[in-house]
Amino acid sequence: MPATRDVVLIAILTVIWVAIAVIGLFISIPGFAVLYPPVILMSVYPLLFGKRGVIAAIPSSIIWNIIKGIFPLGFIADMCGVVLVWMLPIYFLLPPEVAEFKKAKHFAMYVAVMVPVSILGVLTVLSVLSVFGIVPQKLIIPVGLITAAASIILEIIVAPPLCRGLIKYLKASGMYYGTWRNERMLVKVQQNSKS
Image (cartoon, rainbow, N blue to C red; front, side, top):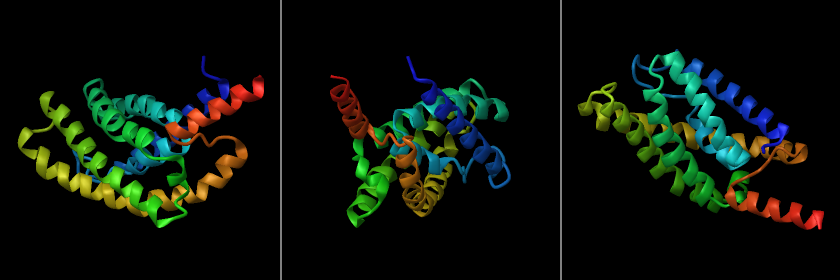
């Protein structure tokens, strides 16, 4: 059973995601999210908030796709591309110290995972939307590559300083969970303190 604190955190993360997505309505090409501002959260959430950040993508996607008028089909596409292909690999593959971006190797590790999952995530979302007839199949590659390039640039510029700026506060407040490896370590520490 999730703790109340976890539910509140997921709710807050959802509100932030949807608010940033709404801002994106004013800077995207109608019908295509070439610059989708919540893209920065797709890396930041799993790095800082662990599985709670990944889970927050679910209600965020529901709300966002209702706003866009393509629910439930857009939601299915987001679950495939955003959660499964984009956020979960970041959560499972990156070590927790990457979120601090203290060393060049942390940035290199982040880019090495983020770039391919960004490209594959965008192409997956567009491919699923194409299967549902929302996006023409001939636009998957051109729109996908433009969207992925914009996403990668935005993530490289915004995610590292955002993580660095938030991590101290989140650790001090007990709201930092980190990636899968860090969460496993936290569980072991909690179990040892109980015994």
